[in-house]
Amino acid sequence: MSFPKSPRSVLATVALALTVSAQVLWAEDSAPRDGVFVHVSHGVEDPHRVLMALNMAQLMAESRDVLVYFDVQGVEVVLQSAPDLTFSHFPASKAQLQKLIAMGVGVYACPGCLKAAGKTPADLMPGVKVADKDAFFSFTKGRILTLDY
Image (cartoon, rainbow, N blue to C red; front, side):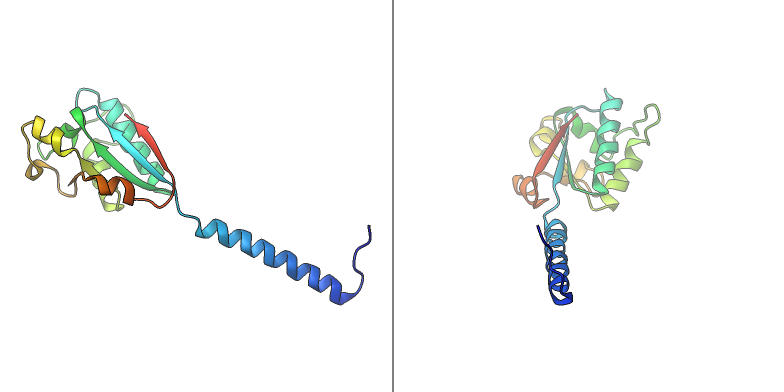
């Protein structure tokens, strides 16, 4: 196999290689970010699950689109009257929720589960929204990974 020896041929080969490299890097940068859907169905009865879910949501939000969804017993955690859950080394629930909301992470509560608990949207913590199905599909342009707690 012989390689081009003229300066013009070498320059053309280098230019082609740089163009291909730039296209690959541009394609990676312009690819949509994947999303993480964090589903929390446990509530104050299981602070470990709740705090782990919130912690994972925070970690993932550093590099991914994240939506946190509370249903079943989980709606208890996002009420204004909710206790501030603590467990082991995890930051407390209210601090984690406030941080997620400040980061722009969507935090949603199931409307049917709120109703079943005898609560209304007015009972939710500031920044927590009532879930609607469109939010589940519009929070990210990439693939959706689900974590269940």
